[in-house]
Length: 133
Image 1 (cartoon, rainbow, N blue to C red):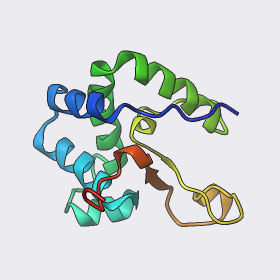
Image 2 (image 1 turned 30 degrees about the vertical axis):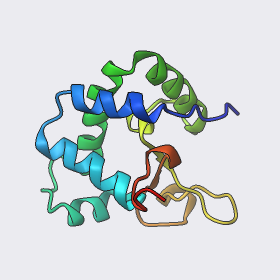
Image 3 (image 1 turned 180 degrees about the vertical axis):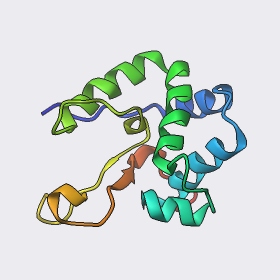
């Protein structure tokens, strides 16, 4: 298994500024960075998003825009993403978060019988919910 590459936070912040995100995309990124853990339903409810398009689709689109600004880091992260997927498929949303795991090491996803919705955790270096601690 490939170890997750860590993002350079300063480069990420600059990419975030230059990615041309629309206000709702920026709100999604900032919200998940603050909250740390989320799923489709909690994200949709917290931000009062409509059901279509799905919140995770919106997150993915925002990450695609950010990835353009971080080509080298994004390439490394997408390679890692493939290694994390049971189907060996990358997901651009893995630029900022990844599937969570329970105490038994099982993925937090309906397919594993652990949760109702795929549950994601923001990468530690991007989490900002505790402020400057």
